Length: 328
Image (tube, rainbow, N blue to C red; front, side, top):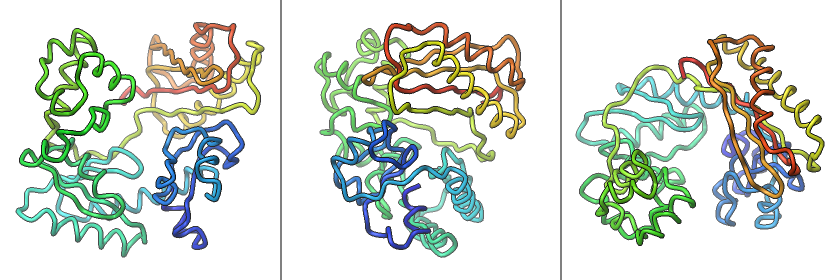
């Protein structure tokens, strides 16, 4: 997103750019993305815009322009599909390419050059023997470089890193692992999946151990990327304490989501509501529908039912509504 903004606004090239909400750094919205120049100041996705403004006051703060970003994404993915590879799109700005050649760096250079020539956008290419290692390698390749991580150099690269360096492990999980005396990737890889599962759950515990061991998928799915859900959310300039207004805002968000669903032309299986209380406690709840539907009245009713499950004695700063598709 930030790269697209710098491309269409030449005066922003080389400058820190922060995209989020309505672009107002004094608002209570959060950062959707930040340019590499802004990241050097510690600005990160999900950070409150106000904090981003304190860390990088000279940044250009812009509102999100999703249709433009989607169009740019489609252009890049179209370029990737012209190569003799399997392309699995996993987001607006990210895709896995499966290729069985002997010189992946050569292919990576071709991909970067073609994307640059056709879209004027740069891309970083991570090379790996599975999806996790490729994903982690991409992080080291940014901005705009190439990096390879395989089983041979996995622990040499990440073994001494904190567990939070792994894609899929957040601060809360990192803290729980630390309570078990597990602080590094190597320590987690050498841990008993059963022991970790006793603290983090029988499914997630072994999964986190597998991440530390560098395990991931090796086969890509070449089907076109299809969004799994549609969501809308809004951050209020002032906290809301009147729950009748909260319900009205939920209904309004549900109507916007219903319009998105109608445009997709797909049925919804589940409706979720997100509530962020002041100062920053976020809670989500969701409801599986009795049957697939795209009826706006049914989606609104479901959202309002879920909204009724939240506590009403705390001020609300953000609300969100999500519709998850049947085939998502």
